[in-house]
Length: 391
Image 1 (cartoon, helix red, strand yellow):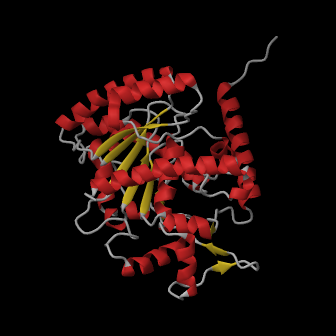
Image 2: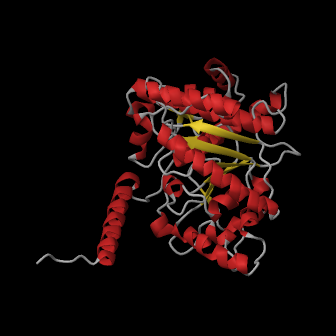
Image 3: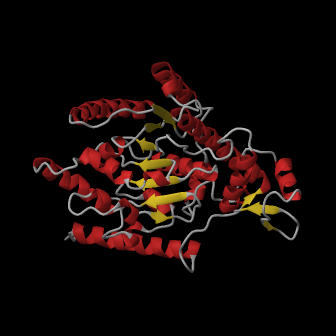
């Protein structure tokens, strides 16, 4: 006679096994303190991020205009993200035009709030949002990442373990919940990545989806679509850019993020199945946004862009899909696609991004191709921010 399986018990055992394995994996990578550190950057990388030539960077050191940095016994200079912020400030004091090196908000500029979203999982949403956040931080912007996904992949990439660190409290849920919400400043964590703070995600966020129908019936104010924007108001003066990593569904969490956003980036994998599901997603979004707009939500975006993800330039059908999209949406499709590359998935094995790993850990052409692709995408996003600020 076949043994029956008690499904609850099996699921719980599997969850505990995965959790223990992940704990062991994290300790292996980051032991003994199980916290990540940001690497140093070469002179070539620092110069590219600062927007100057390596020879000019050398001259600044030679003339004693910028402080000394970490130097190897062989005489090679390496720069921390904090070093680059200091150098930016020094360069800005001698620049002919204001904001040449400090490119963030100026007086009168509103904070830029970007939502990365898609209806489907696996569209590269978290990968896109974390790389955009890191590139902007390395270029001197003050960035807040808000993980609105109960799965909390973005939070994990910043070296936290949501299933341990934020099981009961400490997520963005605490700042938007209906009963006794906490100030967002109490939730925000400083990350190891200079220039990036994090409002973590976690399973507790699912409660917001469950509680909102009841809150709507009880007319609890502010309504769900205004709660995220209200929470951000307390801290927005501290940041140039706020980035939402939204869950892969069109629920109350995604809607609350959208209603707080100034720009929207929809990640798309270029195949016909994904385009078909995106069509449904856009239709549903429009219908729901109509409802919240009529209820008083602000639906004015500075820009909306489709970000082509996992693009293989030599794949004929993909080329056709991208051409179809460009014909359909025109300039709303970003010029630069995010190329499909093993570098992103290989870096992910150690819960890192391509910007965090050393070039020496990869085949040189694989690494350079990935970084060049990411830089083109993220610098295009930066130019959208600058345009929104009227520059």
